[in-house]
Image (cartoon, rainbow, N blue to C red; front, side, top):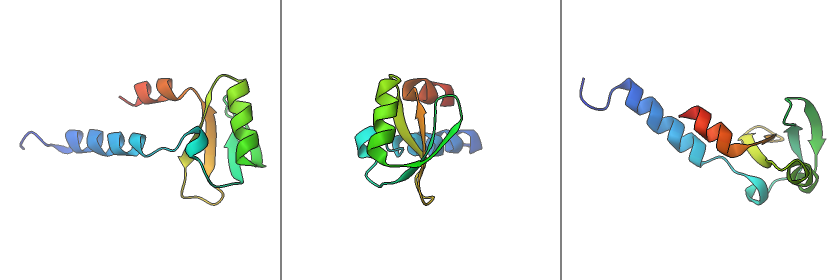
Length: 86
């Protein structure tokens, strides 16, 4: 196998997936399903309310399943999430 084996392809797909996650104000649809930083389901709420919750906690609002309806969003420390995916 050349320099682009399965492992390299998986890393490329993961990098693309990470780049495409919408965060904070880039989440334009409302309402959304929200999971808090502890993993508890908050429920379906307006995006601006979820964003306020994330900011109050010093975290970010990230659309983790943007194609579901309503989109699933998680309140999290996004930088730590990206680092863990590497």
